[in-house]
Length: 429
Ligand SMILES: [Cu+2]
Picture (tube, rainbow, N blue to C red):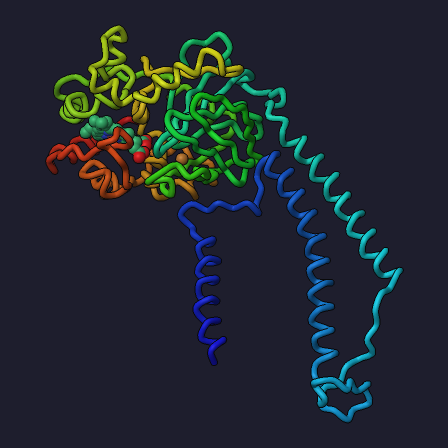
């Protein structure tokens, strides 16, 4: 009775853990590889697991068999009777030492471990090759700098490589878009603490550390929207720091790039979103960039307010490192294109999720992308209520530390202003 009373809660806890793996809002599926590197990892896993599986079944099968076969029997059967303390128990013949058996169970595991080591090391060396294979792509030199920060990811696209470039061609957040089938060379880094970039269906994990640039490569076999998650504990909202990598057919990728490269023009008075844009300029441009609209881009030479600089506190630290430590890649300080510590919103409504991909802007995005319609946001219903809630009080829906310049603060906007801002934001396609 006592052992059962412990077993039930233990089993319950175990089942809950198993169930947690079934979450459908951001499936992190390591067993369903969809990229070159993920296949290499999966092959290694399957190889080791099948050997381990056979051994598991053998050992535990033998254990179960022996436990059953030599269970305590009623005395008086034909087995040898051991005249010890347990006079009523029946023991099998006892033996000590078996040369062949001992040699066997030394050599067999040694051979097995060697085989596993060779296969693992071969796979590791292969995985350690983080150079993109020569692509037959429309952007053969494209490189992306992936910047982790508390608690979202920024992507700086260099269509012609980082070498010699001073600024990325464009900057986006939350969702990294890649052309399907092709290797994309990217580099991870961080603005604050250590994060780790992980899209389980496409590749393993890569740390994003401040002051360092880590090369990494990603590729997807099929068109899709592949969920990921920050996988290095990075503070308060670590659990809500997610991302997607979206693989598009070549022509759609080019279309997406064209759109991202297009700056906005300030709206004319009388435009239905004119008021929303003015509210944005008044309330939001001290942190966010909209290319063509916000101050930082209209006059790049403008000195930033001290308040703004505070938002970039860690970038100063970063500069100190940047002289000696960097061997590859570039990292853009807040300038025309990077917003610093807040997402660039120039094409906010061209993404399908926001705030570290914790909220879906378009709830149908997953199925739509798989059906080839990632770019069709304009024709889909967006989740207005959640976006309103975000503007009403960000820390209430995604914990942050805005007073320490981590995350978006509550700006105490009126309901009317929130309405206008939401209309404006979803017009930024
Ligand atoms: Cu993180």
